[in-house]
Amino acid sequence: MKKPEKAPEKEPEKAPEKAPVKAPEKPKQEAVEELPEPPTDRKALEAAVKKYGVEAALKALQKVRVVDLRALAREYNGEFGIAGREIRNANKKVLIDEFRAFLTK
Image (cartoon, rainbow, N blue to C red; front, side, top):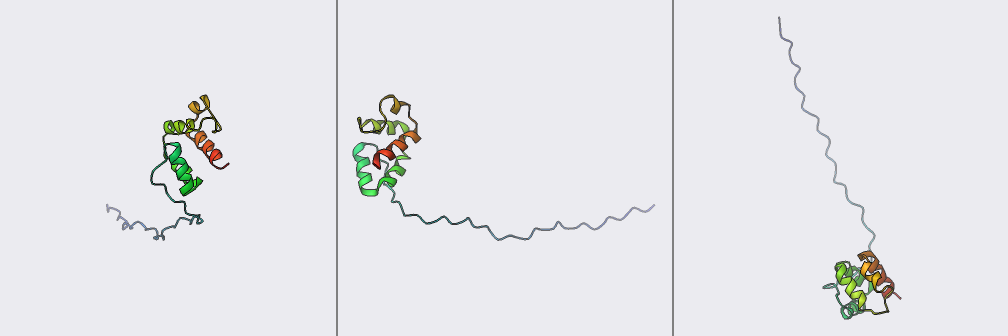
């Protein structure tokens, strides 16, 4: 008996190479100048707002720890939208939102 002959092995077909997909371009926004370091006290925050603008100062506050944000909020005795326990229990988002409301009024 003869052994059946094997069919010649085919090379796996290669998928045609695709051109790299480019990410859609984001609309250009006004350049917000970076602060050299995040403000950690009232004077530094007010100077940053005056020199760089509110949005740049708020962007820099995103880099500050929550504990430091709470201390900064306490420096605004009675002027800030929240006080006392509200500051103690506030998370970073709430504090940043309060700073935005305070700085834009």
